[in-house]
Amino acid sequence: MQVAHNTIYLLSFCFRKQCCFSKKYGAIRCRKVFIKIISRIYGCGRGWVFTKTDFVSEFSEANIHQALSSLTKAGKIRRICRGVYDYPRYNNLLDRQLSPDLDQVAHALARKFNWRIQPSGDAALNLLGFST
Image (tube, rainbow, N blue to C red):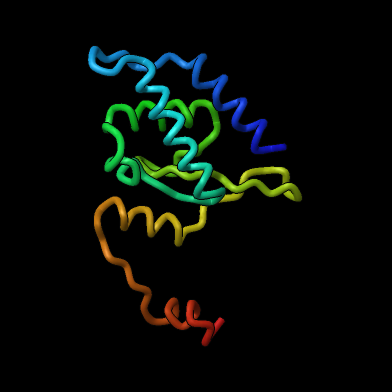
């Protein structure tokens, strides 16, 4: 039931939202990009941290920027820092959004800058379950 409600809200939000108009594609192209971006965000689930480089292979940078900024203004995603966003997790007990997972943020920054990260020392022992 919740998924159907989110889909209906998403479609109504898309068609009320002003889109960029280009001579080549027009507003319909922008709405399709917006729907594809938000469905990919919802598909990865709550707690997913991402940057615009996660979408660059499929869409133009201007359309990605516009979609992410409108989703941030609508409160659907949260801007953690410049260029890093997350789909926030919500805790019913605390009745508020949880802070982003730092490991997810590190992996998003690694994807953005094409870095390879590797835990070492105590962090590696903790991930392997040898220490607390």
